[in-house]
Image (cartoon, rainbow, N blue to C red; front, top):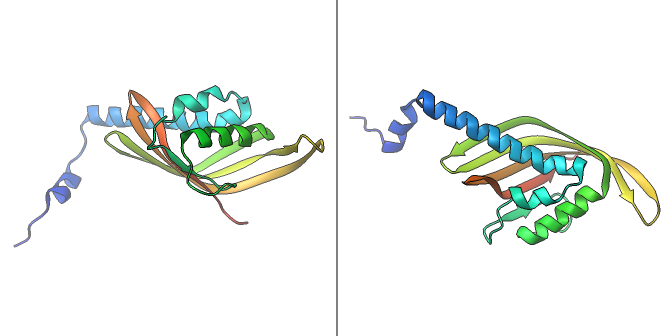
Length: 157
């Protein structure tokens, strides 16, 4: 006799129209948070970084540039500002995004291309850069969606 688990049964259920609408709205809001994060590289308005990330001991990030260790909220914000302010003519492209929502937790994975001119203010020089990478963002919904963790990873050419 075949018995299914509760989890297997729940996977067979189809969302209602209302649930689908809520999921689509959540996905839209999550996309806006991710876009806001990377648009900061263009606008240089760093105040938004604090608004879209969860200021909490649970926040963490890994990045593809030094320092490579796990970082908390304050260190991440400072390094994001430094990174985005050091790149002029910044642009980015997100490809093959996947958004999964589990109640109040959202997971976003995608391929990321970032371009710009890495500026050396001391030497008054700049170097064109293109960074191909992957990204994973974990968000939590607390009134609005906020970034709880992210990991940026370079892909070797």
